[in-house]
Length: 269
Picture 1 (tube, rainbow, N blue to C red):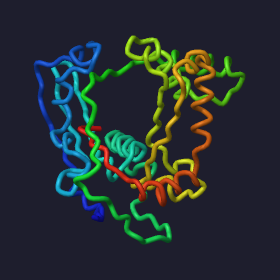
Picture 2: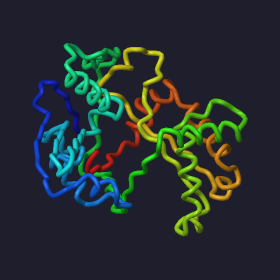
Picture 3: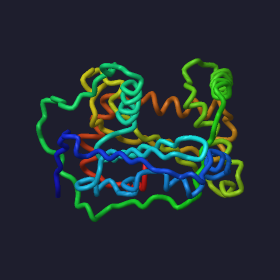
């Protein structure tokens, strides 16, 4: 068993300036799948697994000059920070770059929860989940199309509670079922990560740098997913998300996670 303490002393940040004069923006955004060159535009420390953060940067930023533009890559160690806090940093840095004398929302580093117990971590060499080697792709949507999906999903379901992200997720999952690879699958699992205390009644958690993260899973049959259409699939996702809350997050952190914790190995953010 092992325990760690994060000391906010600025030593865990790395900033890199690089030049790739032979690479154009079109080389990055036009290919169907993410080209291999993209991995080189991220900080070298981005390849460090979460567990190696003991001696490696917890935050790394690389600014690369391209032939016709600039590529800014961020990498953060998810063992100590989640996506919400990560984007808080990016937005704060943007405010500073625009000349702000102080950032609009300061992070909370000292969280007094009334419980000073250390969370003991399992043996580091065990339970590592390797990252997928499958091709990766980034989908770009115009501002209008996600809004249309949301409107269609709510109309089909007869509600107004489905969010844009929920409708977009349902749409992507339904489209996947039409692919040749998915035709023989009887069930599909949709996994939603980075669920945290953002909506907690305890306001102190809202700005906390080190947020608890957990995932919720929705299991649905492939035939049911197709028959329900966009609206029905969106409702299922909405119901799952609606069941999450402060009590669920605390139960995941204090009981279920500590009883069956494991580490997922990420190559980069």
